[in-house]
Image 1 (cartoon, helix red, strand yellow):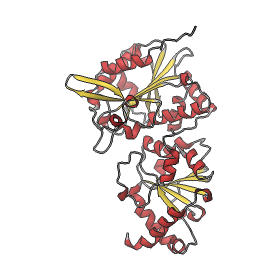
Image 2 (spheres, one colour; image 1 turned 135 degrees about the vertical axis):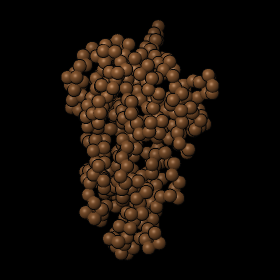
Image 3 (cartoon, rainbow, N blue to C red; image 1 turned 120 degrees about the vertical axis):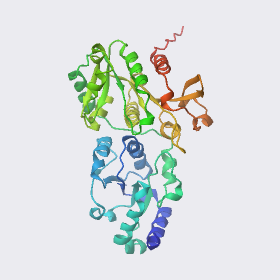
Image 4 (cartoon, rainbow, N blue to C red; image 1 turned 90 degrees about the horizontal axis):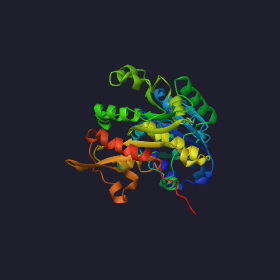
Length: 387
């Protein structure tokens, strides 16, 4: 990286001298080739705060790997704070129209720096092109800052603070979700419960018998349908039929091969009352959808209950890193030893306990624990009467 030091030094100087009020145009640049729905959502669902920090600049997105565009486009559709989404190669981007670039994926930052040095190095070093470059650091803070080439904009981070993110589902999209559900068997008097059964790592899931015992308990609730997403159309309905009775299968809806955006519209439907699943991206998205609805006048009573169960994370990770800024989500952890195990809710713990990494793996949950917790969450609260 020594051959790029002059260019890098000047970029870092530009970073330090940057006046947020002078920023007119920003590029968010996806450098890597790994696209997980939750990670993407966490990184890009706060663009409204980028605009307020930088005095309302134009914000463009470019994803180098076209395979990731369907996720980014699905998350950002109808976002009023985003100007455009493209999938151009670095050489096809006119970087001179931008004041700031935010990089996603620190692993490819050196490649980007090499490109900047080769194409714009002379202009950058001579102040003909005063580009500032920052990284959108992965939310968990698991990677040491020394591993990043470009720094985090800490003033922007402080400006965002603990503000929840937003995904912008329109009324027309909600109506599409409502109609899709009705065409697929949901009746007007029924509520929609969504149970998610997939995630990026197998060790983030319940034992399969525990999951199906829990599902059977949910299916005993009256006037509901349970939705399961089969986004890759791998035959989940047939698989579930091996575990469930014909009657129970009749209470389920399987979406097959829908796009991410279509799934988000269903999550945001008027019928959705309950969402349950592992530490997975669609629950992050669900929270951001209802953050937006709440900001636009939805009653808190209409927000569905959301539960994510978590287990033990890899070294350096903890549940708080993923769920500490999700007030609408009941994030479950399993604590204890031997026969003395109990479910605790992340947001109910002290600050010190929230940052503890001690939690039992997901395979230690029992169906009874989860059923009892869910029953308590769904139980109607007593109405207080003043005289």
